[in-house]
Image (cartoon, rainbow over all chains, first blue to last red; front, side):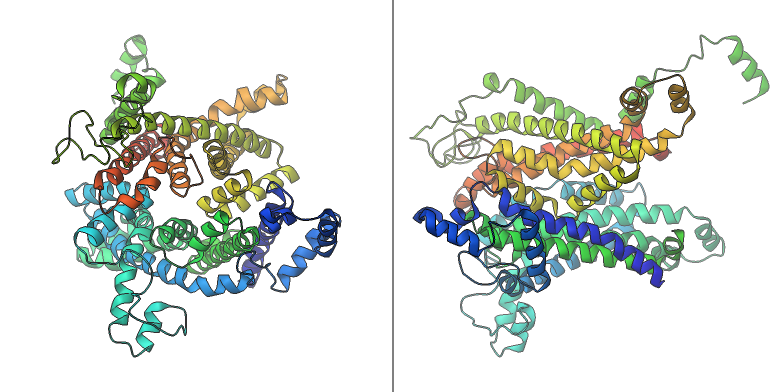
Length: 336
Length: 303
């Protein structure tokens, strides 16, 4: 077991090094000198440019610069925003809970709807229900979610007036940030109605962000269930006279869940990518909106640090999923 | 099958000649109604794209200043002159959509060609030579897959600067690892087969072995991935356009159109609705056809 964990973790190290390398070069590939990018249009004298270059170590050979960059990262220094002058890591940690809250709600929405839909479709293969689930999930899979968001806003916010269009909480309320998770913070505060407002703000973005994972999970559950339902032990269970509900719910679902759990775990990348679009549309103060704004403001240190942090996150979560998969399924663990 | 049938079949080979591969492929493809529907939609969109100049009622950039934000013809105040209405500066939405089809098809074609080309070469080299070069290439691909695809595309665009061609390049970079991995896996499974050994023994050079002996036998999964790749390319390029990082206004790219329509979401639903439908229908068609191709081309999935 220990050997398995170590060997999987070791595979991640080169990937992580590569990502560090990529983010290091990111700021050097951007057209123009990093300092000129920093001073913007104000201009700078050649003497001061030379001084700044020396100060920032830009006159050193590239490998020395890379070494000091890695050193900085290992000591938790991910650079400083050009616009706000705050450390990038601090800004990331401040905005991160908003993205996590949104992603967790999105994945919950996707699982709660997608799992039963997939199971039902598989247990009544070829039925009207099966075709509907497959059709809808294909549609969800092909959906440009930025447009889907606009459509939902058009219907629920503009026409029906049920949900707000942007932000995490109505301006009527002020809630002291304790955990950074609005749902928890509003519950902890004494403001009546604040929790309700937070939920209202959360519904549409979660649905939008959860749409593609929903489609993927429904399809995956269906095909995985179909495969398991064809196994011999299911026939045995049927021959024993067990009810259909017991066979599907108890015998088949357990084994069908293994690939589904992996797929759910692998949605983290999709969620973070989708969060960029969703947060931009709903003005959700999270990591995705922050990254897009950093591009528009030409705030390259934020983009550099942000990309590195997001990539690290995805790598770590994928590693955890991989390990869990091995723990759930001994065949994988002992296969290598 | 009885023994007499066997004898009869052997006696009359002409009658029992196997159908051509193309025909068997078409039979199993045509069984899938969704795939055929997808193919039809793609053909229609392709025709619209090719003949956009003749089909579109107006120029995509001509501004009819007296007809701003006109609703579609069936709504109150709409006219058949602008069947799907006009946008905020009086451009005909239908014409812009038709010209947008040309852009989206071109985006799909260019992105898939670039990614397929680079991916095949990388995958062939990795699978053929193995060793350190394989490790290096595949680690690089894993790294690219570790980043959310949209984020990676955004990073590439941030480096190169916004614009349609840079966005296309960015999306090809992002989808490249899928093609490289598929090619590598197919090459490795083909490499040990007898026909490859025979070709090698009879003195075929490395390039010949790679491109003319092995590659044609690896094409099935690549064709499927390329079809599905069209939908990814169109979606991602539209997303970049929507974020202001892809095609720039006044280019009638569907994502860019949606971006400039955002502020009218409360006043003019048609400006927001139609470009999205265009993206959805096109992407859906490619996904349907890709699924059908996979079922038809992949013998492992045949039931």
